[in-house]
Length: 408
Image 1 (cartoon, rainbow, N blue to C red):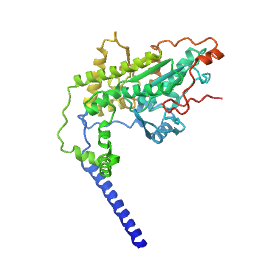
Image 2: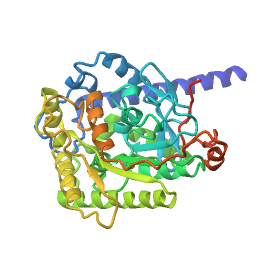
Image 3: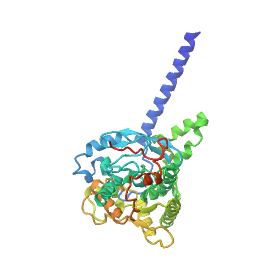
Image 4: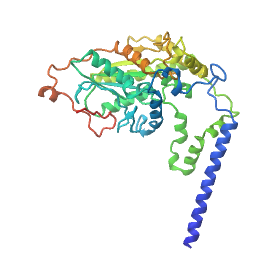
């Protein structure tokens, strides 16, 4: 009897294994045979963009090969409440992500545990896709602060996460405040293109990226059949099959959709501003630069533009115009840096939104020059009175704050 049970289990596993193998083979066949699902017409039909890792923006970067190898190993994300995802901890040569999922970077060695803090929120540009830890935007800002004010060392914390839209930045800010630890002197939000790309994906403004996939997966774990269907629908070949011969989606007028993107973005700005004001925190809001606004293009940058979806490019430029037309008298002003690199002759972008280290340095200086001054700190920052008045660092168990490590 036992032998028959073991044989039956073995046969069942063999059938499951063969079935999965057949599914994978069929999926690969569909990928080869059917055209890739299209999100619309390319700027130039048939154009292809170079891979980020070999874009000419990195021609002078001796560290590029090692960085991109580290990048491939560090791409794992984990589920996190409210904001959907965060990076998994990682320790590498060029990239380090702490136990709470936040990227490390350069800090002023003189900044103590209770030094004034500046928090920077945003997507992968803030996180630092394309550059080592020491060259990320928060690291560049930390260096500028150290260079300008050596009397009051500050810590600049990187809250950026790949793919985040402005609504997720707002939620990440709220969660960090809920840690009830030391409040920042200033928060900087760098957003824009991810909001536009999400709207391009979904024909709807104000939501995170890839929501259609989450809709397919919702509650699927409660029913094995739905779980299998959710996994099956994520296969590339199945996506090709569903898209093959399907009628084109109904598209919203570009100008109207762009206006909705800006409306949603400014609503999130207003909500973040309310949180900051309630806690006496200074703010800065930045509409980040992108390749579509660059007029002088390198060979690879031109290839990236050519391979981009025409509607995506039009939507981004329309959103830039819609933001520029807004009146900020009754709301927090937004520093519009969309065209920061419009006349830059050198290659700076490795795709439509990511900058090389020199581009990030330029961006950091442009932001830094417009930041509000920090509040004056007590003359004797180490006095017992100052220490008693300051809020304690966030509890170590609060996973919504970066881990603050102080050099001995």
